[in-house]
Length: 442
Image 1: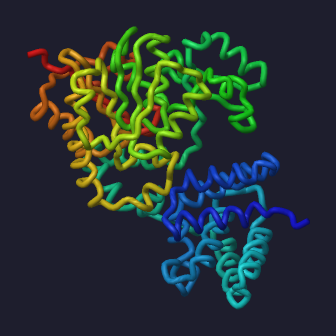
Image 2: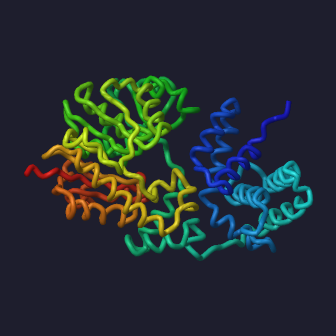
Image 3: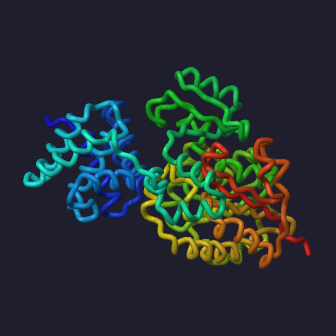
């Protein structure tokens, strides 16, 4: 029986993402599920090599272009991908000697019927290995592997120092963060369950129900997870339902809910009272919410496939709280989904801000007088964030709802009454924007 080669699996994942435009986290997760019989070491290697190659792609291409007469953009896709993933191993991974990386790359090229280019692959990689100590890149766009237009935008919005902190944060390892469902079990009980499996849990300093965890093999084997006592959620995202001030008996509408983190949080805060309606655009997205609901066992949630741009008269002024975590550029979560920076174009930002306003126009009509609209995105783009928050006040029947007192003390200084922009690398979480509004009563 042929041994499964982690490098070949990684090659196929990267080809799907970089050459076919598929979403990196989905392709990687599908591959890890398919090959879950592999040793943890091999699965970790596939994850690290895939994510690392995507994270450092701009730098890897710049390095390869120095030592290859044929520039990366002109190479055959398979050869280009083999070189990129091998360059990542040579420059950023110590586990395998460079000579072995070169040999494995040559084998892969031959296996994929590029016998005639195996010498080229070998030559480029051996030169890179020999010269890597002299490699230096002064351009911060290359150093941080961030498109130049993105870096320039952040420099204009936040200043050079913060722009570089944001960019650098995307290249750092991040712990997995989870939110405990305390209507199902107490924080102490959940911590005890994790400890019994040798899993370390550390408070994040945001909410007292949000922890980072480490020391597990795969999530599905964590008892507290498969029993529905916790949900994977970034601390920034967990603030959304918290800041909305959800109280017992409320009707909550989550209009773009997949995969369901905020829906589950709202249901947890209601503690069996009221109801949550979770909506999203497709059957597939709603199925993701339903999978999480089934695992966590909340009975006070309904799901519905619905295009958020289209007004639903049946829900007019029925919701105490509308959670509007809207489709966005995702610039705040590049650390988790590095292919965002490779796919996104500057012109996409204006189109997204316009889509968000279209959705907000419909969503605003579902809020009862005196009810709350919580607008959030996982981006760090002013047009999608501060400018849209100002647009809500100018065009919709809402006024600011002060959230300062509901924020952890460490974040209060950065709050602007009803809104806060969280920055990766600065606030210890994903890049995330939150703004709260109360509907006028007259």
